[in-house]
Length: 575
Image 1 (cartoon, rainbow, N blue to C red):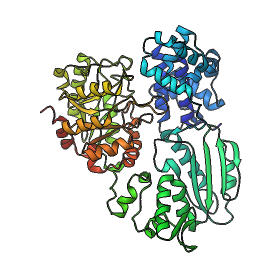
Image 2: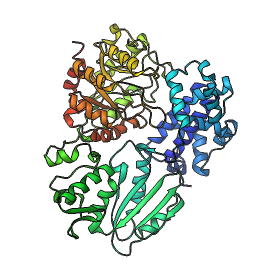
Image 3: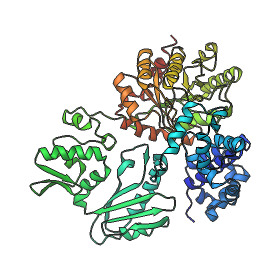
Image 4: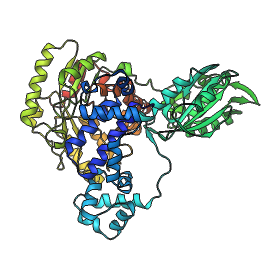
């Protein structure tokens, strides 16, 4: 049974959602979510550990009960506990979770107070005004529900880049071993590092008599074969993901990879440009008077059009072609340039590792600094720190820094922006930090004017240094709250505030367009992992991809700077 860590994590996340719908103990729900996060990012496959007889309870957050559940999933491919839970929670009730704005807690509330068990019953309650009686269902949410329930359900599912890219990489590596195969590359949205992708596109360069197609359709995880041919095959995996494989001779590989990388808008713009030059571009190459003049490499495609190579992340027809023609393409930020992480959590709140463990893990990545940003008191679900507990942590960080070599823990906190625009802790406490990371964690349903006013007021506080996950979006789960981002960016520019690009897989917030806006306004960006474990520090690569899509260069990203310069920039408002 081929069970990957992501499959086990998906089971635990589904259990957490169903328990949340039932109104179960929040600590129990959090245990499953924490375990899912740890398992997903764990460096070794649970399947292999189980086969080796490894004691899973030595992994943080995995107790005996969860250990036995992991073993059952690995050995059988399913979990009886989840199956029983699904019998208790109707499928229609679980389907409500797919409606934007309706999370597990709201599903539980609707079920308990109004007996709502399906989307049709929710729509009826919305039409007859029953939802107006429930606290938390304000005008903005009701309007969003009307829009969502009035739409036909989308038939095309999009997967987070974090979920779909490892699957694509695994398949590509497997296919590379096919005979007479020269090269296999991932194309499409994944290669452009979009935050989500609807399917996996692979392009292979093969010589004659390759067995790559047989290898492809014969994989263990194949659920269905949609198309089978000598140059193209299409399959559906057991996890529902669609995968297309295109096979071409090595001499055409560059042109085909370019074509299927996209974006469509970028390719159309290039075709129009080529047409004006008397040339034609398609998936087989660039032609002039029906003579093939470029196809081996992507660089050849651009060269014959009179421009330098354009990186995949920039291919969205957002000015990259004009920039290339004028020789002003950005030198995009790279992972190796990152010198620290400015958003991380520990066991003091909802993290799974200690201060020292996080510091040593950051040092192992070659970082000079790591900011500890545990939640403050308003976020009770995360055991947010009050004044006394935060001061205790500050002392612990100072003592640890005295013993640490080559890495410094920065004293910070993820401070709630309250509804009235004040911060969650008094300035007398916040001024003892190196800087404050400030975020919105509730009252997402305010109007754009009210939400913007709330945040702008908070930014007046000189302790406000970094604005964390600025739009509040959760990919596939929660839409961004309404916000005047132009006004926010102007305020950041005026006050020297940093915008965060949160690299958590379900956030990637700010998105690429906002990165570009920040860059053009001269606002620095912090690419932060919001790590809740040592493994989460590896999410930096995901954030880098988003930053590159937003044209960010090394000088645009504050955590490419050394420790002294970072501290100077983050403390400047207080001084």
